[in-house]
Length: 100
Image 1 (tube, rainbow, N blue to C red):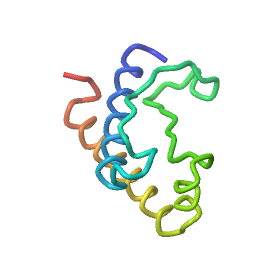
Image 2: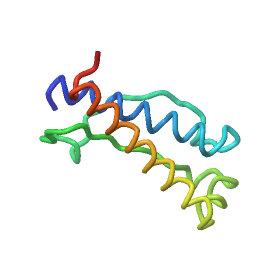
Image 3: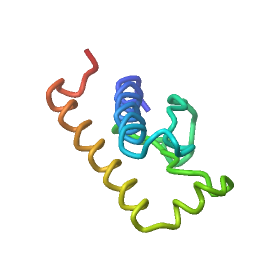
Image 4: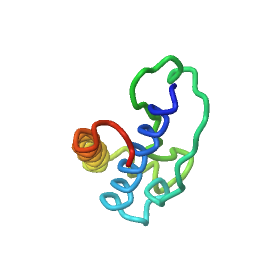
């Protein structure tokens, strides 16, 4: 990834992480803000656009595993993710793709 795409990916990850915290509540392990980490994942190599991987939960956490099985919770996750992507696109277009 070029430096520009890395910066934009970090910005997109921020929108998504903040959305999870706001929409899913801090009682869920994955919705606590654990920060944004940078790592070289093969699936993101040679990507010429903002790109991220996101964790939506931990099946090894009993209470969270129960939540992840519920369709209602799955919809909340999907809606939060979609809303955050829309928010990122609006930010991206307003800033011509560059972080100010």
